[in-house]
Image 1 (tube, rainbow, N blue to C red):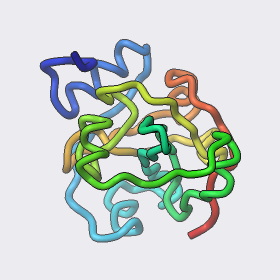
Image 2: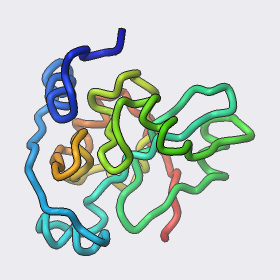
Image 3: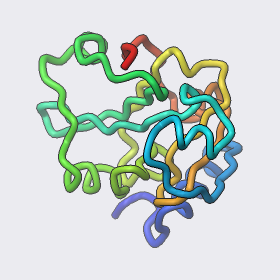
Image 4: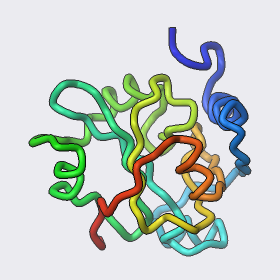
Length: 161
């Protein structure tokens, strides 16, 4: 049985946030064709949009990597942090199976399995926006509160795009 059985999308996100005592704000938003357009629609800087990337390890377990807009995962840094030789981004069907969310909506909040979370150090001290479990929705959250609520590891895991 998965966590938050019977709840879908943003309901799962909100239930998990509530269970963790985490204050989030979920908003509806139009689709955007670029990071810059999305940031403009939300009235924030591109670096305040955090991508929740689900990363597959060779043992078929996963980890969430939280990386701000304008940056990308540094595979050597993330492999070193996790002490593994191989990591990859799974295809869309594996990402859905691992999290219960479609690509573009993925968030650690409400994930069907509570995989470990690694947050890039550049999000510390910011109010950020991220996926909210459904297309057309985003959530806003204090990154430090999110990191604490998820028990996330904070590290340098990214490089500029």
